[in-house]
Length: 297
Ligand code: 3HC
Image (cartoon, helix red, strand yellow):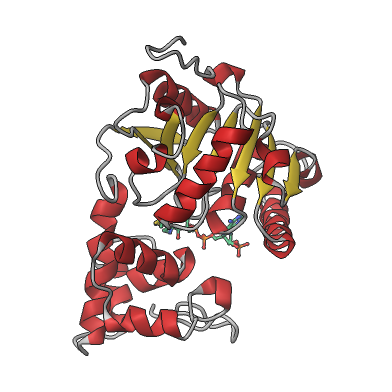
């Protein structure tokens, strides 16, 4: 795995210890998937309450999977492989792979990668779960951009099969191939995204599907329920765009568009302003506290 420029990259088969940065929807879901696959994994977030809440979500999810016989061992056996911390150096000091799932702000990501450069072993792979930020730009924060790659999971990671493995301009083949093999070891299906384009493959296609209906509702041309019903019953999607927005977090798509300089429809602006962000806040386009959920059938 020797690469011109001197970087000797971790081989996928050598990956044993993994750190996941971020305990939000994606961070805790990825942590769970990695632990189910048999790796030791440390989940880190900046506040104890975030880490604890992510850990509780993992417990909930593992119990569900256990009840349904979808994991080969007990939920406790999987949990035994998960450590949690708020300390970055503790999380990444001795790892083979870091998967970063921090909020989608370039300045924040670059600050984190600057710290990773100081704290991680030199041969560790640094993988970002960014939805839409440039891997190339994130990688400018480390001395050796060859070891930075995108690994973009989908929500909820435990249920979604696909993972995009994204090349930044300076990602080495060895790093991308190790990330690809690692994703396969999670029993997921990786696809390479060889150009670091805005939104990669999936979100480039999914973006308009999410935003166009929000313009229609903002312009009183359709209701939330009508748009969701149309996409489920006519297009055969598993969820309507608004139901999906509630699942992924309305603020996530909002920040992606902000970073990309794309105008957010008024409906989305209003939801973010009111902090009605979807399932995670109990209310979004639909109300989850009242137990209604997405009621467009
Ligand atoms: N862990 C364990 N169980 C879970 C779970 C989780 N994380 N999430 C849901 N479940 C459980 C539910 O509680 C429910 O259990 P119950 O039957 O005991 O009540 C069950 O799974 C749900 O099963 P359903 O039969 O209702 O639903 P399906 O399993 O058929 O599908 C789905 C659920 C996979 C979420 C499906 O609706 C789907 O594919 N939706 C679209 C999701 C999607 O497109 N995600 C990508 C978003 S974009 C993204 O992430 C990109 C990023 O960059 C923003």
